[in-house]
Length: 405
View 1 (cartoon, rainbow, N blue to C red):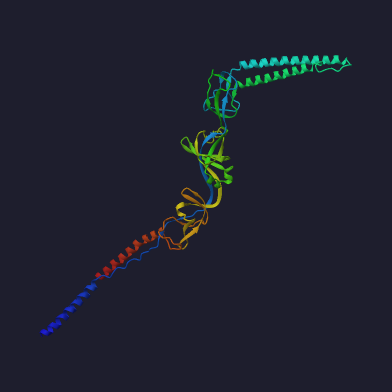
View 2 (cartoon, rainbow, N blue to C red):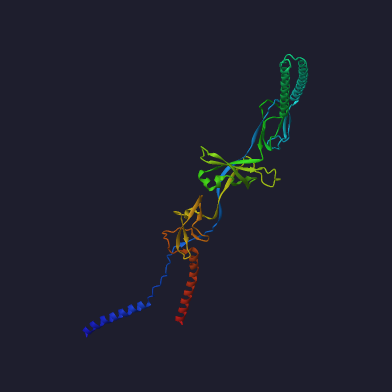
């Protein structure tokens, strides 16, 4: 009996252990299925937009008049008259009287020269008459030829010379009298005035300074490697000038008229000269904003025109290639033609089509032809995921309620 118990008890224990094992195994929940992870690289793109483009060359300069004139007294005397417009900043027209030097002495000199002229002409007429008388007397003498002295030709030549000298004195006296009037040689603005009413000026004294207002100039420095982007190295190129007037940024139109033809020894720049007509807007009834002398302006010189081009950030171009996302959402490298580097961007004229998807985000290990995903596509997947989770949770709750029943 004891031996049977020794055999039966271990068997019962084993059976009980198996039953307990199967009981706990049946109570264990099955492992949840993990969602499939999408390891496709996500990128951001921008659409390429091709359009006609004109290359611009940036520069700067200071506005100055094309013509400047320092007025100098050519005669001496007292200043007896000054124009009301002969003040700093005043505008004067060509031929307008600015100042008058006392003309009394020069009027007297002219009268004296005229009197000398009249005396010389009288002496000339008298000498001509005497020469005619001498010639008539010699005609009565047939046995000898008359000499030049006997015909009074030297005396006549002397009187002719006196008349010419008197004419020269008259011209000089008239010119000096005209010089007592200081007039504007062209339409100008007064830059300075150095005399006052009653001042005495001598020959060579500085009277004032004029700035021509018909044309203004701006010297524009341009780096030598930028000239290639200009047509004919900038000759006759249009220029847009921007500056501040009355606190507002203003635009003026100008034109390149010449190159100075040398490279500056200090800045190593070439200089192009732009002209602006009527800078103070005096001929257009003030319809445009004046461009004042001394103003600092920035310039954009219009250069070559490109039929189709796009501006791309410089960091997106590597070895003259850009990364594109093709129609199959794959990476594709396209070789491009770079026309110019413009600051942080490059101008591309070939190798791109309008509407191409340019990849603007970084890739860790880019391989040509690799599969890519857009940020917008990934966002759509994330937006769809909560709805699936809600549906699965609803299904689990429904199953639990059915089992409870």
